[in-house]
Length: 489
Image (tube, rainbow, N blue to C red):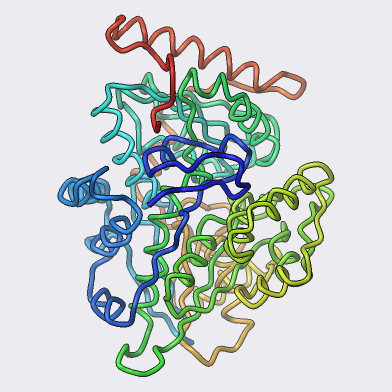
């Protein structure tokens, strides 16, 4: 299994190479050269597997045993899920009115990203320990990615992580889950800008191929293929939990409703679909509706500005994983994707070719929800079920309540309501806060401010160089930092 850039300008790499990369050197995103196809017998066999066992089966299709032997892969995934609070790791709540909520948030930070990042952290450590190397992870976060990424690598000797958060645009809990981590390998920057603005200096550093290679830069955003790979399991598990029977011909369809920000989860769904899973996908967004407009009208163009909403982790205008979806639907036409994305990068406006838009609208349904819609869905769900939804899960529930369905439907729930007290209060609901979250407010915090007008990329360069020098001093000359070649080569 090799991985190629969506833009076709980079040599193919193996899983290790994709894992230790951010954007591909040509600006594209890594994707498997071939998507495995699963037959009916395999789906029936997998239907009785637990969530961790599904992750193992899926990862084994994309990670050759010569890179990670099967018993080692199994141990890494078991270790990744060992800190999850639910015995099944994820849990399906079957509520009234056919509302099925797949709770993906039983990890340490109460967010779905704990699932993929805990595995990715284990994969990283496996390769780093074998090669006695060090990496610097760069992460931009709109809310949950930062804390999940930090938890996946905190205290690891071979990793330093640099997280940029949009100051004041995350919830207090989300911010505290990052700034209260005081391990020496964790570096948090509180930027006075929005989610799209904090992505710019990160893109700039990855685009500097010499700097990125010298300091072994990598990303744990859903730019990283490993994140997408693990998230494919969400869709298989949702399908097997909600499908009435796998004894019929053809296999029954299940509709999966996916709250969408950067687009990693919906990309994973498109790959699951391509593998043969009989699912209908719906991408649901808040008022930052670029994906909705793209599906409905082929209009992949920025609005005037990012709107702050109750579903703050989805306040994104440039959902970079759309590039992966378009690549899939174009038949891996990297030249077309290169042309389209270069046009978008220049003008921030793109009208999809008619054929590509048709394929997209056949693959995905879409819906957008206002803050009023979100509050209404939160109240509706509570009044009917005494069940609290986070505002992101409520975007999916809004779709459910407003759109009748004739086939089973599953809404993915990306975060616990406990992280979004302000949204609950606005809906007239009473937050239920776990003690470990309450304790955050009394803990010491640490972060570096990034002000408007500063050169954020330069600030990051200086800190990364300083950290690299400290690491070299610790390990001596026996394991020099990042001189001569990349980890994944």
